[in-house]
Length: 142
Image (cartoon, rainbow, N blue to C red; front, side, top):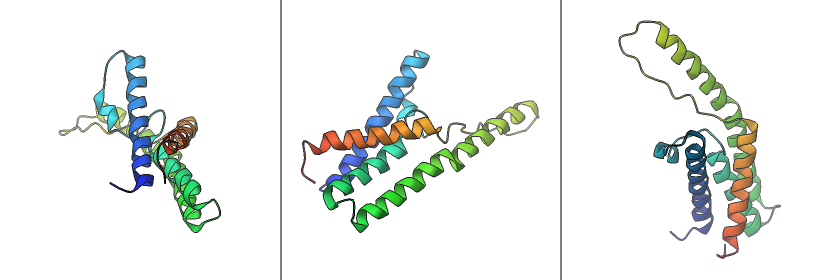
């Protein structure tokens, strides 16, 4: 894969998913490898991915380029959505799971509650993405 910006962004996503898994291990004293592929939690891997891409584009093309503008707008939408719509959907899922436990339903399906992010999770995801991208760029040429 010759697209360095994409490789570094994917590396940022994976590194943050790994960090999330380790945080879960420390918190709950057990490994939950599903965390490597789940959304939600601290820090936000989605935000790490888009902020890493945006930072890489700024470094390669400059912050006054159209590419940077597009990437920044895309990143802000992803981050806003993570804190807004997806976070609210997670709250709804939590309430629906409680209701589902109290009402006899033939087919019960546990809804995923951890969909979105708190602002601090988005912040640290973005910081992680920029940091990983900055360090990675010391070893490769964009």
